[in-house]
Length: 458
Ligand code: 4AD
Ligand code: MG
Image 1 (tube, rainbow, N blue to C red):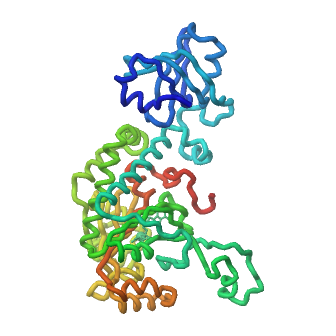
Image 2 (cartoon, rainbow, N blue to C red):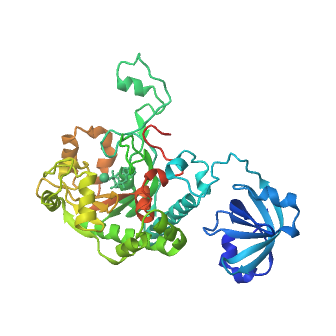
Image 3 (cartoon, rainbow, N blue to C red):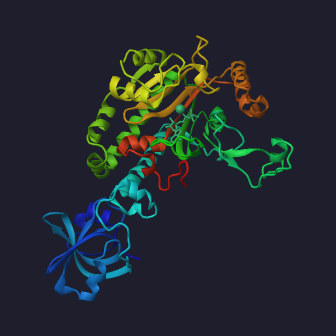
């Protein structure tokens, strides 16, 4: 269908001014007066709508009427002209209705609550709010690839179906083709009859395979879906979320922290430059002061504190926390948010956590108690990055695994990366939806995914 994108019209307005053009799109709103009708048309390419002006005398009544319907899909021919109020608009010559939109279309009003829109995930991309969410999500994805591609990282595709539970947290979704077999004597017998002849699940992280790739390719990143069967019914947890996981050889914790900060600033800066209309909209609709916040992030250094010092800060805060604070406790969201929102008031790396509350693969510090790991916390959300230097020493790694009752025989290949030419290496995982929430001010992870998957909701 020959037509011009609305984005193109606005971007190259000089070229199209006072010429005849054809546009296609959906009616967002319309107004009618005695002699003129107005339609706000959106085609998904431009955050700004194109205003259509219909001189009533110039078109037949039966051509105009079916177009003055919210949600109808139109193909419109007319002149692209200057306008005092809108910059540019279109003076309509003819209209073809591509798709009618009956009265029961749920998006009749201008503003709907986000809760309501969650009940119609198939229609919400037609709203301004979700158009903005998905435009920023798309640009952010591009910026993420751009950073890594420009910094010598290779993009690797790690498997989605896996036999290993990376975090050792036992929160994997099972992948199976067989019904429950009550006759099976034990788990092993049951799984050996399954598709892969082994217990399989959806990956919680591409890290272990990412490490395998990095220890040949030097610097890699993954960017794909990961799955967690956590029963955390919060505004920040999804069962299916996208994770970005770089893995860098010849880098210690200090190096990877520098990379993470540079990377976060790069992608925010890219979105700020390339999605100004969307961010201005979120600044009004989602988070007042969003633009100032983002500019603040770009121009200041992230905070840094050890876990041990953070525990002291929390103990001395005079705050009543729901979960008690003591050395060795896992930091809860309320603790993370106090540190980053009230104490530091900016993004914050908390480093050197107790080994007992972190994963087996993290490098053991000389103190024998902590590991070279860091979480990046941001105001309003809490953790957006989980990061660590990896334990490169084969014996230390094995002992950490045995302490956690992990079956070494299932990790022979992973352990080989330490046996053959082991190197210091580090990496992190960034939650796509969490950083998107931070950049847009969107408050609920369910509003960052096309089809959110959360506990009890598919
Ligand atoms: O801290 P996590 O569990 O770290 C890892 O998976 C490591 N293997 C990463 C690595 O070193 N390569 O998860 C990383 C990030 C979190 O900081 C959070 O942003 C996001 O993934 N995340 C979730 N996002 C949405 N919903 C969930 N259920 C999430 N769980 C983790
Ligand atoms: Mg984590």
